[in-house]
Length: 61
Image 1 (cartoon, helix red, strand yellow):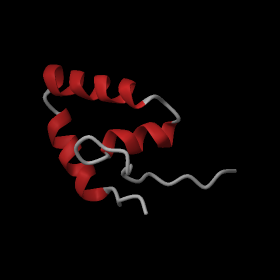
Image 2 (tube, one colour):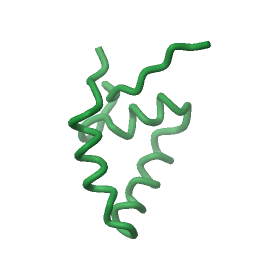
Image 3 (tube, rainbow, N blue to C red):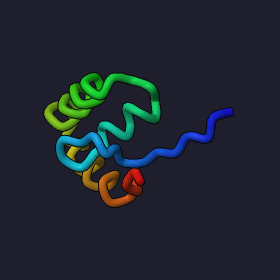
Image 4 (tube, rainbow, N blue to C red):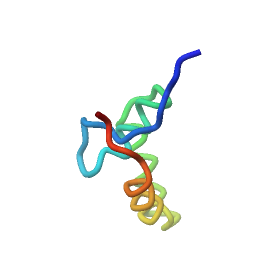
């Protein structure tokens, strides 16, 4: 079993949170960013979740 860790990506636009999630789940980063944008616009919880993940997720070495 692969030892995967959830970390912020070095390939980043703002903080690397979406890139890190995309690498962890094996998805395209564009899909994660679109879903995140929809969460921000429709649900309102996306911005707070992004800020929390930015603080909690360690940076990629």
